[in-house]
Each structure stands twice: as C-alpha cells, then as structure tokens.
Image (cartoon, rainbow, N blue to C red):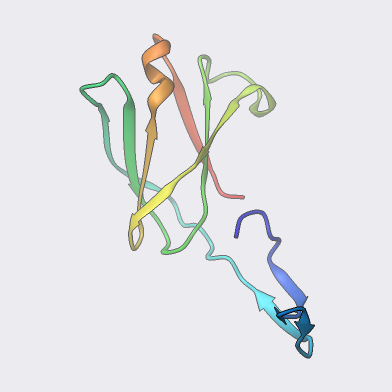
Length: 109
C-alpha cells in the first residue's frame, strides 16, 4: 500500500459487507539508512539501471533532471523502486534512451 502515512490508524475489515470491530493499529514504515550504490549500468536496449542497498521494506521513489543544480521541485518523478531481494533495490529508467545526460535522486516518502 503506497502513500499511507505512518502512525496510528483505526482499521475495520469488511467481509461480505459486514464490518468487524474496529481496532487501532500502528502503521510503521522502515526507516531508510544511508544508501549504498551497488551497480549502475546502461543496458543493451539503452535503458539505464542502478541498484542500491538499504533497510528491508523501505519505500523509495526516483527523480530525474538534466541539471543537478535545479531545485527539487523541478526534478521529474519517474516512479517507485523495486525491492528485488531483502534490502536490495533496483530501478530501471527505460526513458534514458531519449536523453543525452540525466541525473537521478532517490527519496523516501
């Protein structure tokens, strides 16, 4: 589930339209640690791929820009990052073939 804020929430389960008794649950998101880049390469189809390690279950998004000095508000969101193994994350930019130079940032929501 993406975009659900961490913290306490009232949860009610519905089965065949019948609600359960509500319960308060604590929604926690793993805290990201400093990122370690483990691989960056151009694939044979021209796409650019990079991998990194971080906390298991952490959520990340990728931003791109042609100028790293641009304010963060001018960076283009590209999408989420896939956790391919516990703590191992991978992102592939298939649109990289359309740009000569692109800079990337990862962010944790």
